[in-house]
Every structure is written in structure tokens, then in C-alpha cells.
Image (cartoon, rainbow, N blue to C red; front, side, top):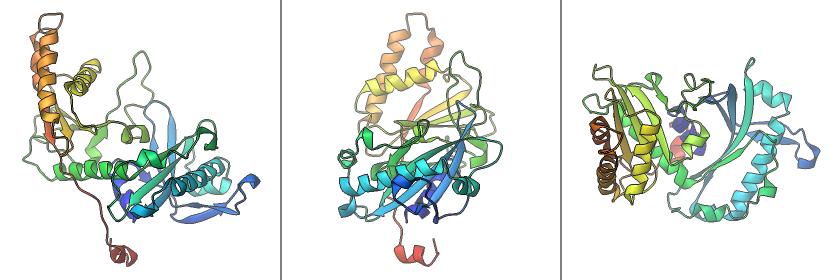
Amino acid sequence: MAEVLSERLFRDFMWTKTGPVNVDWKCEDEKHKNKTHPADLVFYYDEPYSQLRTYVHCDMKSYGKGSITPQTVRKAFESLCKQVSCAEKSEEWQNLYMHDGVAPRVVGLLFLYNHDGEYVGGFDSELSSIKPEDIDIPKDSAVYIMGPDDVIWLSNVRSDLRGLRGEEDSSIAIPKLEECSFYYPQPVRKADLNVGNARAANLEMLLSSFIILKYKKVDGSGRDGLLLYYREEGKDEGEFLYLIDYFRHHELLDFGVDIEIRVKASASNAHASFGKAVQSYVERYSNGYWDTNLSQLVKRIKISSMENLVPSFNKIEIGMGLR
């Protein structure tokens, strides 16, 4: 179930699957005390701020609520660290998954899907048994963990994006996937390394507090659109003051760009907090250097709620290859 969900999920964040699934390959390190390591799924995407292509070696876990414990998470994490360490130097693994002519970076992803839908919050406590000294991976690599809350959040974002692609009459209807890209700001005083070509949402973005999609409006206006998916609760105006300042700092406030912030349906105070933030921001700059254009641009930012869902699958359907 975790494999089925992850393939669907990451496709809409523009990751590309590479090589075979569910294969074992030879361990290259005697201290691991393994004959082989597993590879559930491997994806890749190009990084925005370097010429690197990141290969994400995934360990997919589908657990019931009672199986998500510090012990099971630590065991899976330690196993994944060994896999990533070996993948870096395994000719067999590289022949299976890597492309010629690219500068590769191998990272690990522990993907934890709660198949009974009963696990609620508190995942940080499951990570308490993992210490920095447990992370035995190459210097330039990394291992990421997506817990049940992360999976639900990203599933909601994916579902919302797919829904908006089917709403041509909506003010925030978005075009097909091939005509969109996830947004990365251009670093100040740095040459454009790969920002223009890196369209996928990388792991850092997916695990951050917001995800931004950039696209061309489908209404024929030729305008650009920005959708910011905000993961936090939006309990106070300071959260939205930061987002408005983020738009301004990266020169995204423009009359030719329509910006909409999408929040979780459970973020009950977000709309009120956003309204106060807009008022505060306009008042702060209306008599200073910034002219009335800034006030108009800030007031054009919209906020709306997305639907909440919990991804679920039928075991029998999956087992019969029907999903």
C-alpha cells in the first residue's frame, strides 16, 4: 500500500521513478552483516541550486497504529542508513538506477504510511530513540523520514492540485502538470545554477512549512499564478506577515501575478489571522518608502481552504493488481 501511494503521490510532485522495484542487491560493507540490501523504489529529480541529480532510495513501510513505535522506526531507519551507505559505492545499485552523464547524489527516504488511519499526531516521540551517532551515511548524503502526518499532508496537497486541474471555471484553475513547476527563489548574487530547469518539489520543500507551485493561468490572460500550500495552523497574524514579506522579498508581488494561499480545512483561525496580517502590513508601509502600489498588491493576495482527506486503500484490490 505504501508503494502504491508513494508512486501516485510523488508523480504529482514531479519525481520520476527509475529502475526496478522490490529488488535485492549485494551489500558492499562487511560491517553491515548483510548479504544483500532491498530497494523498494528509487526516484530522481534535479536540484535547483546545484547541478546535482538526487536519487531517492526509498524504504516503504505500511504500519498499523500499534506498530508505529520508537523501536520499529529506529530499526527501519538504521536499515535505511546501511542501504544508502552501500548504494553510494555499489556498482550494481548504480547500474540499476543511475543515469550516465549526470552528477549524482544518493539520499534515503523512510516512508511510513499508517494503513488503518488511526495514528494521530505525536510522531516526533517515535523519533526520540534515533541519535545523531546512529546516522552512518556518506558525508554529502542524507536520510529523510516522512511520518504519517507528512504523508497525509502531502496527499491532501496532491488531491487539491489534481482537483484544481479539473476546474476550468475556477479562478485558480491550473494547467496540466507539464505546464507547471514548483517555485524556488533565485539566490541573491549567485548565478542561476539550475533554478530554471528544476521543476520538481525536492525533499526539503516537501518537508517544509509551505510548498509553492508556479503556473500560467488557463483563462487566456497570460498571467502567472502562484499557489502556496501552507502547512501550519495560521493561528496568528505573524505567520502571514512572514509569508507576505517572503513574497515581497522575492519580488513575487506583481500586478501580473495572482497569488493564492491554500490552508488546511482544520486551520480555523487562518482566514482571520490573514486578514489582520494584510491590514498590519499595509499600515506599516503606507506612509513610508512603499507607495500605494504595495498596498494594492498585498490586498490582491487571496486565501482559501483545501479539503482534508485520509488516503486509504483496499488490501485485496492492491493484491490483485486492481489499484
